[in-house]
Length: 209
Image (tube, rainbow, N blue to C red):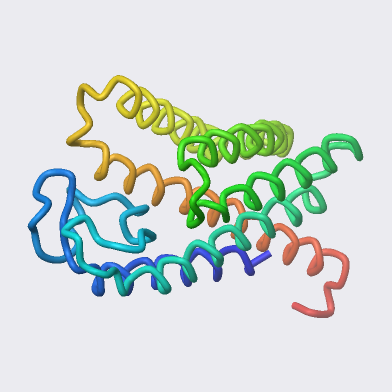
């Protein structure tokens, strides 16, 4: 169960490296230099050209990060049901919806409508998330359950700002906070599952202690 945690760390590393190669330009200043953690979006790194009009050498690195992220989250939702028994139907629903969500998300770097890809990936991801919440509640991991609710709140804030446009200047930083919080949550779940499995093995095989 540590594979998703490793995947998250690799993604963060690739994300950071990609920002170092971004030429410049943001929603605030089209002529700025470099990547602004306050004013640039993650998707800016995936564009063929930077906002300032220059070729974007950060794209291949950002694409690698996106691929790792999609693979990581797909793996998370494949492995989760096997460690938290929710019944065959719900287990399969979580796995299928999680895989579909991440498969759709991988098309963010194509010419397909960005909003369409984002909305479809979010829809199927939401189904997988609901199953995850049910699993956390049944397992009595209430802190992780509440932590997950914080993620839902942040997603709601992102969506509200994006569609109302009123506080759009703050969206890049809120987006990054939401993204980081979600991936930390996923990592915490995986670590709990890892230690739970480790504890079960020790209980069944006391000679290992």
